[in-house]
Image (cartoon, rainbow, N blue to C red; front, side, top):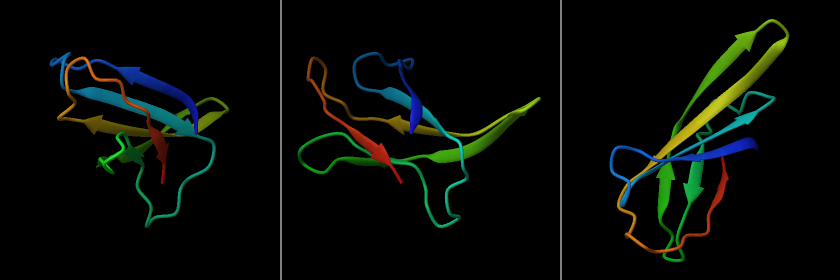
Length: 79
């Protein structure tokens, strides 16, 4: 994954939006996912593509809900 971005949503205390890009298309049976807590919390996202001139990447995005306010999270993302 490249260009990983963490973004706020309308609910700053319990939600987060994560996006990242890859240069190649993932296999059709794979979806972007993130593990974000020690208890195995997993969120699954979607993929789209972006083409402009010679720039072609696959953009993956994941919406996380149910975060605990004030908690710190470690995360792993991929497919």
